Length: 322
Image (cartoon, rainbow, N blue to C red; front, side, top):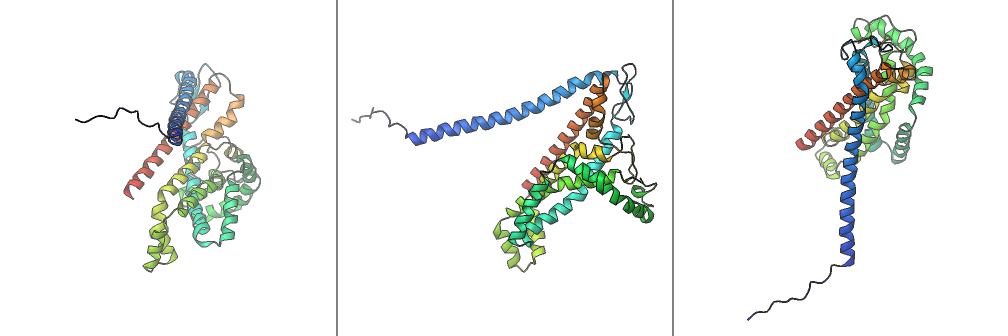
């Protein structure tokens, strides 16, 4: 005959119970933070949609294809974001095209080529550049850069004017979409460099040593082991920089002339971005003008959201492939 032990189980140790409570609290806090982010994003989108509805319903022009912007009257408002979207994408694309190769080169130099002390100093300088306000970049661009670039633009038009991107007449002031793209490239350079540098530091040591053991040079090691491993991080940093370039306001508003033109020419004045247009027009906007500017902000919000979702998709696919 067998007997069962009916004595109660020993209580859990106090330390283990505390750890369980900490795990539950941290999990709930993390889940709540994620839900809060989604709620804020949805709230911003809902606000933009509600506030822009009146102007979109009263608009007598096609909002997505019209280049002009006349939302000052309630009787016959006619406005569109075609020129603004074109200028926004062009300026941000130029900035990304100019900044990404330079940022990757700086990050590789800091991690694999520079002596330790120089690398530390360069790292501090890169982090410091990311903290400079955009209005300072705008002052530098309008007060120094455009003056220095004006003669270069004339030379560029003289030798490459047969290419539509560099055809004349050249702006004598230097306040062109290319100047804005260069300023934006300088602004996003620290972001892409910092992300790329951190990713390159995380390349496994055995990968690098295996490439060198097989007789690869330093550049071949970087090309075959470092860049493939760090590509998702570089793409993520580039998309973060692109997000800042898309939404940059003051620096672009100080450089570009306030006009709405769809022109691929990089050496002429006339293009404008959504963020800069909102900043310039909002102080004097009334009535449907305010709602129209909010509608333009809704378009910029959608563009930024699409870009970030596309970047996440590319990075996820690359990680899965690796």
